[in-house]
Image 1: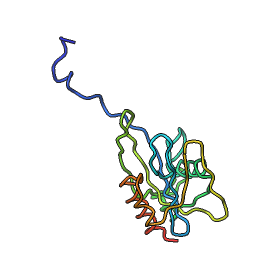
Image 2: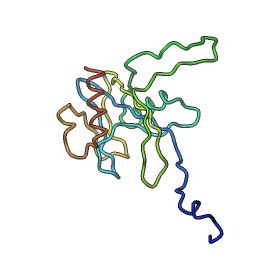
Image 3: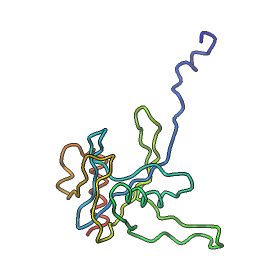
Image 4: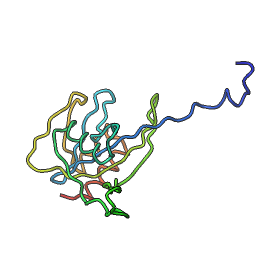
Length: 161
């Protein structure tokens, strides 16, 4: 290691990224959050985008896997610029953000606001200690991270009832 330039020794390792999709699910003026087993925090459903999957497919799959609920986007996808059969428009996320996950890769997170389809009952997945619908007021409770609180309240305003 003595032969390496000092600048190389002080350079942090390059950031590694993975892609995830998150869904703020709204129904009856409330948004659904899950209490993460390891972190003890209330978080929206979401997870890694699998190979061969688009972000909007991933968010619907993750919501279904983690809650048992089917969801729908609040607006149709925009029309493609070219409609020659080779171009497909996706549902646009409300936001795309980079999240630093200590000890892991950085997540590039596609954030969607979704409406829960009526009729289905919520089930708790293995990865969660609890799952609960939160009103605007409930989002002020401890263990709801600030960025989750802000996005959840924004989803409630955007989606409405």
